[in-house]
Amino acid sequence: MNIKNDIKTFLKKSGWSAARLAKEAGVSAPVITRYLSGTRKGLHSSTLERLWPIIYPEEETTKKDEAA
Image (cartoon, rainbow, N blue to C red):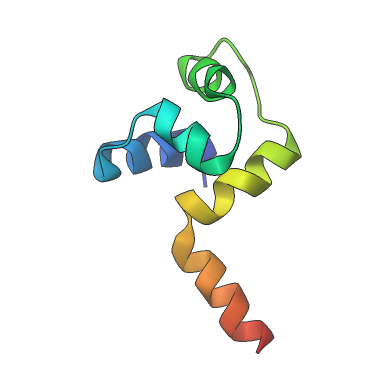
């Protein structure tokens, strides 16, 4: 799994901009754009926690189903 590639794939498939992804996740748009451009090397765990259910919605559903 490569989160950077997965974010890029998500943006392509969804037609969303990095700014929209950031807004929906409640994170700063520059954090996303810097990460995708390579000027930022990683993402903070709290940012990943906010992005995860958007980028990997099927995994969130699976986790909830397993917990039930």
